[in-house]
Length: 489
Image (cartoon, rainbow, N blue to C red; front, side, top):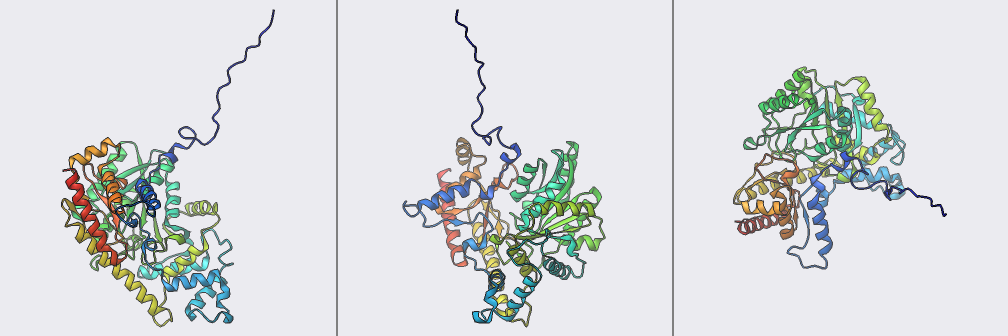
């Protein structure tokens, strides 16, 4: 008699650890970031085809993101001269021919003396010398409101600072943050990653995307009724994607609301130099809270990516915190120290943004000329593009008071809504933007990527292409819009 040994079935083991579905962190998989989403991937695919495929355009015009130098803005000479000097100090030697103005040489010398050079780590908060200069600049900006360099953290762009604070605010899924709608997707993406709850409050499109206090009260009450602990509010001023600038009165209302409801203010102020209407100047939330004597925790953010510098690739940013406990500041330091420090070139760029050349210095005249040219062009392009969009059938567009964007509202025919649904698209404005890209080469972002009121459709576009090209962009958009409306009418 032959004995047989039974072999138990061995369960199959996945060949890889990181796999779709259960093999990854669900919160990370759920992140959405429309600014670099489906439209951009399609644009990149079309760009690869351009040399060999006959398309109805000869280049991709990237209006999807505030990336000024990618669409032709020139870097500021003074900034690049100082950066060249700190990265290659030998350029300062006499044998190099005295290539830099004397104030550039002094800036380079000061930075190198205060650090171990751009190839070495700095303190985790950033080079002390630069933080002191940022503090002095903030004090001057805010008409004497004190600024402490120990409350300033230099970061890899403002985004790193935002994510650091949000990671500390969100303890579990019951913690929420009030975020404006339309919103910049950084905030919703970060809240998803950290497992928190986004509590949206709608900006008032009919009144220039203003912030309505009744809306804030309602959204806060509704969230609390659902068991959500709302811990903070995000304010983007000037607005992204909506371009509005808050009034002093509106800001005071927000501060009083946050003081009463015990909310931290997260003030995204990266567009503070991009204000185009003199009757609504930029005012910092720090200044308002100080002058009100409000007992409010505040974190404000700024970056070299915007303003007139447009140095997105340098990844320079900072965060200033106000009225935060020492323990919290130590935690911020600990979180940032895990990455050792932010990149030194970005830190130097922050210094140059906050303390530009002054009258009488050798670089001032050229610096001022370049800044005026960039700022003037942005202002003219903002007006030209909003005026142009408002001539389209079924399109309304608030003028941009600040920032780099327009967020026009578009009327989409029912047939297009059905066509988008049939293709499994999240919103009909995705169809509109994809067809615009494929017809014109212009890459914009669907309004649904920023969230919007139900039943409305928008897209976000920058007005960053060169001034000589803006008219062509508007003309191409108009031609496409007419064809789209006719196709689906």
